[in-house]
Length: 578
Image (cartoon, rainbow, N blue to C red; front, side):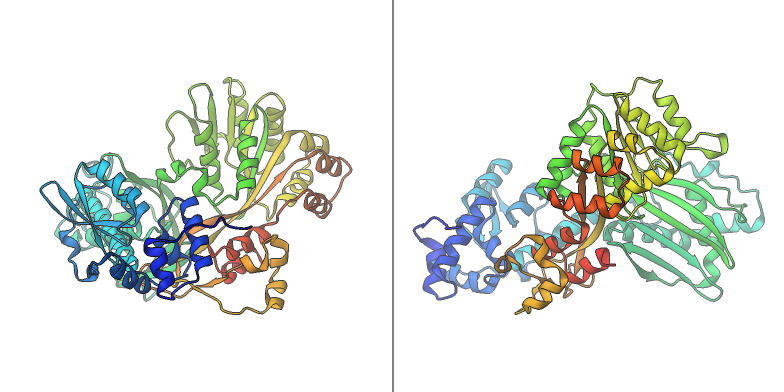
């Protein structure tokens, strides 16, 4: 596609005059950056077209002002609560100091009038731009925002000796079980245990962990965090502390501290601020040398992320939104444990959650509380199964029903009946791909006609670790045959537009990765696929028909994200290659 010719002036012209970049490349970058609503400097740095130092040197000459050594600035002096952190992150700018009505703002491009205007409007101060390297601003901003979050958490926690837990009355715990339990949970001797557990919770939240594992062994004890889907060892306290650590965690989760023979479940709610709380789902498991305790961290804000933050490509997002807009039918989300199915479902429910709709869910367990949605906890001990909950839902005048998981024929049949009688049904299945989901329903015993006429959309998904934007490096001169062998020809992306990056590792990430992104395949049940189902076709027959209609497999979707630099080839192989 031919880019429109633009007249070069200011910093772009200076970069060309300094022979740092070709005129046609800077023209294309200028137009693209404007389209993406980001600054030219940010675009050049993120695409590795120029280094921060090269841009900073040319900018200093162009504007006739020296570069500010931001790395020498003490972050404690940054003025807080002046500019919204989202605005700073959006424009990659950081406030240095405020004098009277003047706010001195470190920014990599002093001509970025959009950033200056928005920050000026939000603060009511006169913004004085100060030239700094983009890399220094990005590093300082991350540290500043991290320290701000830590400050909020620490303030909510008070001292590290006392985690503030919602509705947790320590006085209500029965201390009469035994002298040993009493010693474990009370008195000054327990203070180090309390501090250690609180520190682990705090560190896990800071690191964005999804799970915390407390594991006892014969001669050792370890604590591991699952960060971006990978377990990491974080601490090795003395093995003789195992009973006291277990007792502390069980007290927090309101469990029976005297019961060590059977698994127990509990919950802890941790308030970080007036409007922010984190839930921990706690499970104990008796082992040979004590009790293993796993805490699943449930962040309610993940349900409010919005569909744009999940990693769907535009055509995939369109299919999901169209399926959600239909008044009836079934949407199935599939994938292994830990693949993000719950977040996808909650995101869909959040979109549907309006005053005009009656939404009911049957979950085991309820992971995130959602205002305005009727959530039912499955309880097998009293006979409240998914099927039983569904029967009750259908007598409660529902518009939308969510079933945590279709595990058996009875649940499948009632779900399909609901989908066929004017209700929108969302649920999950444990299958490896979207086409296999249809054959799984058939193998359960659901008639082919019911499957073909009730299922609207199937989403299969995985979670891939995102490459750190601060340290990722592009692979140079990858042979074409390697790209072909990996399957990049199937992505539909021209070779010249494919840039594959590798993980490096820096202070901002873990081994070159930070955060996760969803990888999806979305299968719309078209008339052609319905015919294949009715004719008893296998999952391979369904896949062949779907591919003819433009369906992209998980492997293809993962490679498209690798081609755009979001994930590495190694990560694409880890989550999708057989």
